[in-house]
Length: 428
Length: 141
Image 1 (cartoon, rainbow over the protein chains, first blue to last red):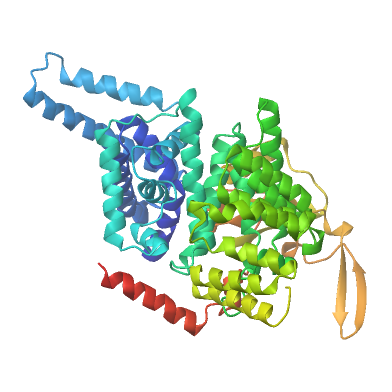
Image 2 (image 1 turned 120 degrees about the vertical axis):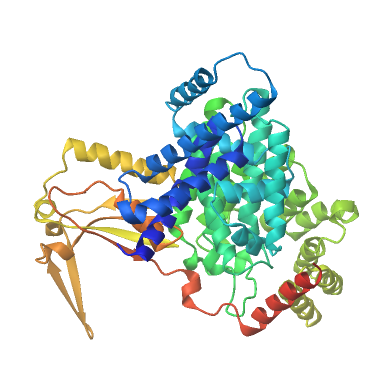
């Protein structure tokens, strides 16, 4: 094997083993920052030895052993250091051996639990949301700081610093390396799901960001979601999130036109929707709903959003969409997680199911909603409903307003086109 | 990126010889690892080519040819579709697969075409806009 071949193999192995390695070492040393350093040390050792000795049969086990020895070394020198400053009566060797024995014993635990612990600590509320995203992508995704920086269009040193500070915060706060239990679990799990979905959305809907990183982010988020679904199979909302991401990702090929312009859901070429992902999404949604039912819980927000996405996925053409069902799902979502945006979406669904007048009636109270001020979709939806009712001058005004609020050039152009069609006497 | 991973047939698989208990267990464990890693999208076994058929195309002519087919080593006996970051990762994962057949066998990996492969959805104008955004951010540093 040439040096280059060996290198590439080692890189591939490392990418695969990195999160498990960090997770296992973090349990021993109780510090993710130190765990990452030790993992990097193990990588250096591999880069030195494997080109000569060949890649081991079980590379993961080799790396873990290498990391473990270095962990014991660190603990030993740390104890030595402490001893210089405190007068310990105990025998140093016996103490180190005790620690080593504890490490051995603890390594009987399945690696899955460690990975789950790593997921929870990376998404810990003690660090900022941006830091959670960066740390998760780094430790669980194995992305380099450069890749993360390109994905979020942020300078690389900013990301590097963000990650360093996050690890320090976790270390200083002595955040325990454990899976939260009882009352704590729901909130902490929410935080994890939020981070994963943030990553997905950054890839899915970002209008800025490196074009090569965007699909990568969706794939990363999907992978993390699927991994989490295996680690925490009893949590319905984990399956709900995976279902939502699989179905949304299924539309990737149909969402942009040849000029890069966005194509709205109802105008997309459905033959380009990925049926493999749709099928996986439906399966995940079934798991979510079944699990919730078994636990005697209502479907959570992710499962409901996934169910809405499934309604679209199920319809062979836009005309076949079950809008009444979508409306009732938004209704349930609105009761669970009330928000003006959800209500706006419900208005759209009601308008499609029961006529534009019914939809408009639901939009009216939203026009005075402060949090929707400046949100271009509000006048856009209102314009659409007014146009369908034949109130074209009012509709045109709404589309022009929406265009002025639009976040990017392509969306603005779409809205101005719609305004122009109203002026020309068209309801659609 | 996605890859399709194709297990090639052998005389045994073509003869309908079922895998041993041990192999089934090992394969099951391997498939579980793929699922746990979040990379497994799909996977199926195929019946021997004696149960298959081919359609040959020549101009407007269509000829149906029933299996079995002769070139055993080129036939596909089973496949997976994986979501991976690179061919290197796919190869590394594949190396960890238990030998799917008694004796020697081969498994082929091929990358699947993605949307991006079909070319310029990103026009020169959009590329320019992207550069301006990037430059703007650099200027603010």
